[in-house]
Image (cartoon, rainbow, N blue to C red; front, top):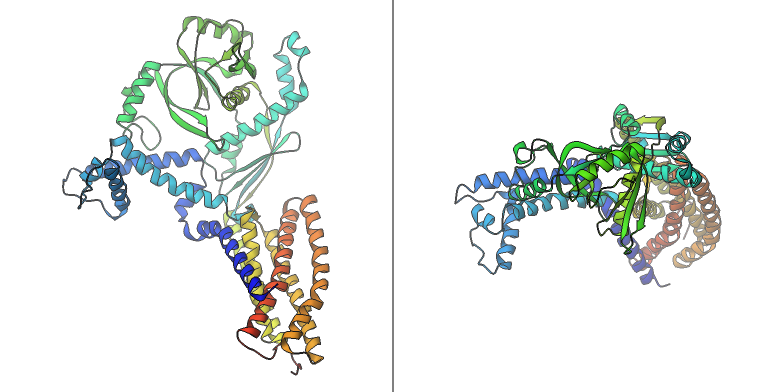
Length: 585
């Protein structure tokens, strides 16, 4: 391979690494702390924040518009550009000296104006959230936080469910399938609760057959988390007041900034009947998260409690349409039969944890205890409703088995110590290499700096979590990478002692050291791969960073270091090699 080709490859590698590292650089170096805090919260909290800030801005701008000559301040300069685009779309002339009133006229109404400002806040926070998702994460030992192991008592859940079944249902009861569904729903239910609590980027996954592992970075109150975990989600059925819902929807679109306060409470409670409440209606978005699509006004009285649900399934109707069916116990069947007989043609909302998950029409009285929900569902929508219903039907007792809290101050100290260890390691290597190998030692140090750069880029590319053990693997990698440089330099010294010229000595030195370096690094890489697959926790973090470090150190020691030598020979026209004491050329 020619030297020019090697140089192009190096530039390409550095460019790709920069692209991988950019989200981490943006998140840790360019994102304000307050935006980080918002981006780490739940999607629902981001939406509420953007809506509250936009409402505040609209009120401020409307107050300014009372003065016909007033202009927007510097913080709203972007709105003038948005208004100018709207004027052009409408085919109207853009005012040369735009006032606040001119900006407001560019939008069809207050709701559109609100949506534009809300989009600005939303896009800023979601862009930061995307950077975080694509960046190197800090583990609990560096960022602080809590990890919790929750035990799901599936035996109690099975016993409770068996007791609610009749003899015919018991014959068809599949305990293994029930356990699987109960555990899956427990994990999903916990994920929903933790996300609503607004905790930052929690990790929630099943561990073994009956345990759930939860990892929550950042500061968290242990008592609040335990209450959240051990509590049970509430699911109830409420009669929907469709007339009030339609009236409220019109009111909300006319007064989007003055309907709710910062806490989500109605500013004017008289806009809905006294015996009703407003609840957000939600659907799953493309990311599997609850997304609010509107509001419904429902009666406060509970029509049916979720505790009466026994099972839920997705099936097909006579016309091939997708339906969600669920079964009620004896008491629930009687309550539901009487209720549906009295409210034919009206709508019934399924409310789970203060969110409307479905709003179905009552076509006929349902007295059999077997209920079918229809509504032109897609398969995904039907399965989401099924999961909501199963959450109420599957009573899985949860108990916190163990928890570990790590303070943020301890994490900050660990970060400082880790950075200090890397800097100290590089510094000692610099002194050692410059002392024993003179000017050639600079090449080795530059290769080590690029080695760290490439390692962090790979970690960022695969969204790995950085822990203390990962830093230990990096520090070990630095020492191993220097070992490769030492092998090359000693080979070059041997060639120089035999009278070879600089270009020949360098070429033969790298060629002769190649297999010795490859053998040692391949064996280390194999060991690291096995550790990463068989190990857990800190052992796995150490092994992953070590495996990445082996690959990057081989590249920098054999590729980058040689390119530096060739650059000095061909571009700087250096005739001798400054590579150690007692080497005469």
